[in-house]
Length: 243
Image (cartoon, rainbow, N blue to C red):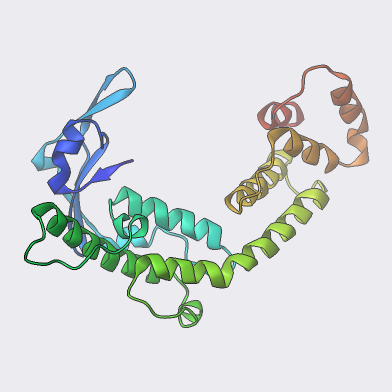
């Protein structure tokens, strides 16, 4: 999903933002869900003003995972995604522009205005998605980019600790029959997915081996058979054989 400002409609027509057009007013958004016509790998947005529907800013913010001090990577990824989708990440991607003067060009004035707006709403968006007990420990700043950096510096180490915990869990978890095999595999897949958000990608072949290692002794013949076949399975194939 890609969203562009109302003043960027030309970008949509040129397929730069082919999916959804949005008009932003400081605390409320109006968006249009266009019809699509596929041409090869591109899509053309057909904008119809009668399709506009208001979406409150806080509704978009509430869909982001709240930062609790232990989930920095996941929180940052969601914040950056949502701000990017709303086309509000300008202040995170660019340094603050020089102050406007009488000699500033129209483009410089336009960029400065857009940056200021992005910075203000990005700060608000991030602060709305941080637990209150955490928020009070983060140094105050009026720069969204600096604020994100402060959060990272204070809590990045917690990610490393969580990654170690998740990896240990992935390596030691066992299937005990208290739930279905499918749910067991889903849980292990979710742990691997969480590790990836922390910067630790678990290759599919390793995840298959972790799942096999989690099986009780009665699955010994199954494991021996798997180790003797030439072709190796991915997680989906393993799941279909076990469930």
